Image 1 (cartoon, rainbow, N blue to C red):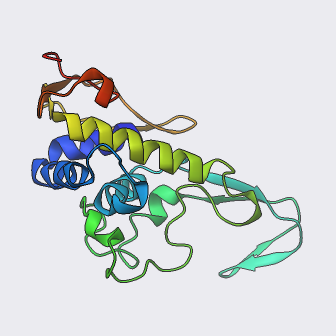
Image 2: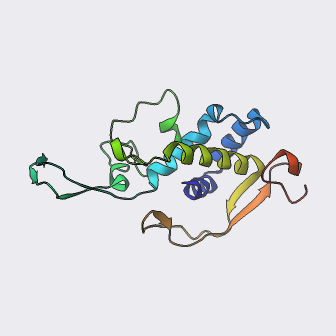
Image 3: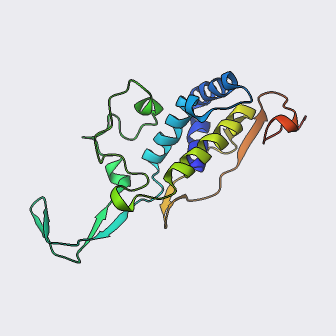
Length: 190
């Protein structure tokens, strides 16, 4: 989630600057609750590049999905990748638009957004992972302007998680001189 967030922000410098402004307004005492846009960027990155591209469940009892019967033990595949890009559920489904997750945006339809799964088997570390990614992204974008060092696009590969097809290089330039004791990420001048 953090990689894809950084990648998408490198492709959208205007959004990256807005995230940096949001972080700067918070100062050194960053409160995750106030990083609304930063969180929306991560949520949008997980919509476009869900950590689990597919979720597999075994049916416990007979059921029916659409017109297909489901027997106990049948494996059901749910693809967040497809669900998160479904044109009936999302406006401009392939576009990077963190505004979908900002306050005041239309609510996301139930079960249309499953980056950590859903129900009793939802990822137990979802809240921790989201908070950690939020704070790291805030510090990173607050300290550095991030650009891709190559125009070669990064394509997703479905392994166990949604991973990049190659490790792209990023060019980081300091947004401002930071004292090393004041931030996790210091500029080369610090």
